[in-house]
Every structure is written in structure tokens, then in C-alpha cells.
Image (cartoon, rainbow, N blue to C red; front, side, top):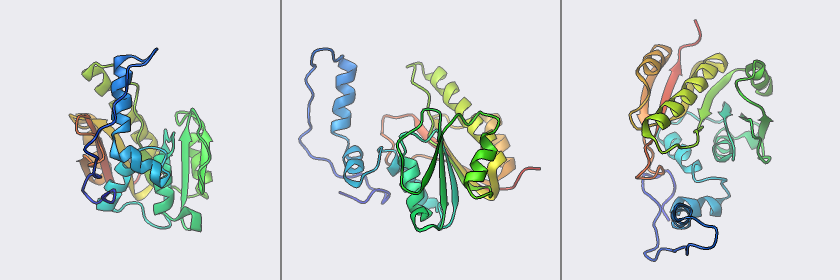
Length: 233
């Protein structure tokens, strides 16, 4: 098994596990379950105790761009089930008391060591100050968003929905980021919409799209990484 984040996908077995279409299971559910059973990132996530395969996406991006630094303060938007929060806590050394990670999700999630979790909607008016208080009264060094809407199967609709989430996360990030801070968010193939990208380039020193190896080959998923926040005017 290659180390996640090394730029190589984990090795897979030549013999794939197959799932029978059991009573009450649709063909699409069978396909999804087979993919999960044969996904090396899913297996590695279980072995290492990560709550989702998405943890490896953040590991790979941070290995390359190094924005999760020891002592950093991180906010994870729409954090459930918590894979990104786990990685962030490890990278900023939150368990050693050097950094802080605050996770927020309207559905809540199980506790994670050294992560402060709020069952709350980040759209709530008091959310920014609540998170800043949880970070010890300081603004964040990094805001993460792996949020996604439920897929409709209609490409244009899905793109619009996920861009709307990225925009909402971006507006929120601008209120709680320190100068020099980083915003990382999920988008879809086609990248960030023109107006949002234009605004990001005004607010950040560098803006780029990233496709980690841990994203499935057939996925339209991309991430927009904005670094070097210039601060609110």
C-alpha cells in the first residue's frame, strides 16, 4: 500500500469483490457497494481510523501546499463525518495543544479528540463569533469545506448547487480568516464560477484548482485552493 498523499494510488488486489443483488437492493446500490468494497482508499481509511476516504484528499493537497501548520487554527465547515477534521487536528498538532480545530455541521457528528464540534448551521448569524470564540478569540488560519449537495444526476444543476455552497463558504471564510489565511473548498469540473474566481483573486495572493489522486477518476470533483488572504477591506 502506497502512503496516501505520496502521489501514488494505493495498490489494489486483482480479484475484485462482487455483491449480489439481494432482496431490497437496487442495481445502483449494488454498484455503489461494489465500488466501496473495492476502493483502496476506503480500506486504508478503515485501517488508519479515518472516518472517510476524503481524509486522503486533504492529506495529499496539504502534503503539496503545506497550509496546515503546527499551531494553526482551522475551521471545518459541513464537517460530518469528520475525516477532514481528523487530518487537520493531526497536522496542526491539536492533541499536543499547539493548534485548534473547530468543526461545524448542522447534522452534528461523533466526538473527535482535540476537535471542538458544533451542531449548528454556519449560516446562523452568531456562527462566525461562536467559532472565533472557540478558536481562543483569534481568527482562523484556514477554512476547509468539503461540503456537497445531494447529486441530482443533472450535471448543470449539480454544478450550480455545489458552486452555491462554495460561495457561501467563501463569504463565511472572509469573515473569520486571518490575513495570510487559506480557503479550500470542493467544486466540480468546470472549476469555480467566473465571478467567484474573480473575487477570490482580489482577496487572495494565489488561487488554483486541485485534483487530488484520491478523487475517483470518474468523479467531476475538483477543489479550489485560495492562499494568502489579503484581509477584509
